[in-house]
Image (cartoon, rainbow, N blue to C red):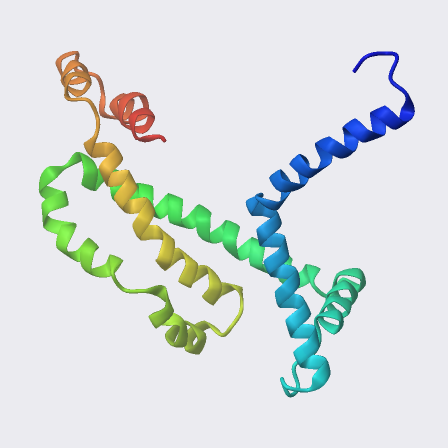
Length: 196
């Protein structure tokens, strides 16, 4: 912009540039998402206020209750228990999955003998075991960990098997020809190759 422009000329140029910016903003997918959420919240508020939803609270009431839960600390203990269950389940699933998967991945006979059982057990959803886990262990952390472990161990086991299968044959033969020990083969060849 030339330095001799007056304030009115600068305002006119800015006003000319604004419609282009508004068109770009109107085409933004993020704006469309925000508009959809705002419209849905407004419809919910209207329907709950008029009384068409029965005992459903308004979004304002839900927001106030959420703020109250967060500020009074009632949400932090259950959140901590959920995160603890997640962390314990993940650690156990990785430990069990790697301990089962690596031997099956390195030994073709063991893999062939167990592949049917693995595929069968992998298809059982953890949701089916919820009533049994609740009856045996209650609804606490133990049943949560067991269910999450059952759901996650199969994915880790299969990835460990495929990671052990994908070891370069030349590298494996080189380790074998130099008579490298089993522990060194596992720690220096199998584990680094199987890591993501």
